[in-house]
Length: 424
Ligand code: SAH
Ligand code: SF4
Image 1 (cartoon, helix red, strand yellow):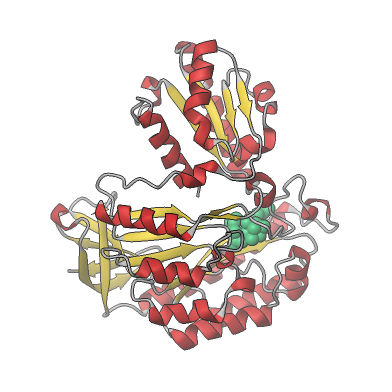
Image 2: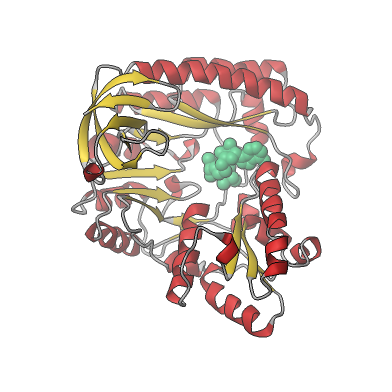
């Protein structure tokens, strides 16, 4: 989502005459787009901003700004922490970026704009097909109404808002006309898409409509909340040809006690039942997930239940995090905060178990032929091209640059924990 917001900001500024550069030393405008879902992300943003202090001293006319969730959270407090900062742009103010930049450049003063709006106007800015790209993100909704007790998103991105189905379809049609073949639909909880629309629609209908757009060969989406994963949506997997055989279904914990305290709205049993339903429709569907270790009150027994769930489900991939206390969220005030050493220990155990599962899943594909959408040249190995399978696995293979943007069949010959090796 942040990547897409950054792209939107770049587009807006390009329309005002700016050009993007890879060299901060020659920039007239720098915006640090932040995330504050975990403390580590916030710290990264602070140190990035710190590094621009010197640049700002050398280039007086440089406009330096901060955007994203941290900007929303701290507002003008940012100016106290970083006196050389010129502007703070909240999550609902992105569309006003050119105006804010112009005002700051003209007056030489500072501006913090973090008001929440009933309608997030930046949602109406269509994604632009980036030159040479075959794949694009498309935001279908913003905000979240779930209030999981550990999470800052609903406070910093606001309440859930869906974009009208027609707008999304038109945007994808335009992307397709410009050579985009794969779209990833973005929302904090795509399964509840459409609830805020006057012209009611649901996510399965949206998938159906996008599935009919010529030229769109692959459809992905993230994130899907297990409590709202309907049977209709599950059946879409067998029905809509473009829909890739992969679902990211964050479970967060394998203990009912912890899930209850997280306010996730499902039990481990219900989660496993949804996984079984998905596998009934597509036995080989790739299932990835998010997991948090060290949530307040998590004991050894709860953690062992998380490992047990992983052994049962055997995720194709897993993003795992140490619980990070976020100010203003209910979990930050809960008793039984887990010490960092224990969180780290649990994370290591969990990640090494997952590594065995990922490898096992990847190795099972050796010898099979997979359809790969070629994205570009491999950054690591010259002469290699890289792309993804429908199950979202990275495949590297020997091939020429003329293949970029084409759909090729690749036979998998080797497997590692983060990628596959193939032959055309
Ligand atoms: N809307 C998505 C997730 C958004 S945040 C969903 O519900 O699945 C992405 C991931 O960050 C979450 O799935 C969760 O695993 C993790 N996360 C969120 N808040 C966190 C916190 N306070 N500490 C650690 N991990 C967190
Ligand atoms: Fe955060 Fe939960 Fe909403 Fe995901 S569903 S954004 S974890 S509150």
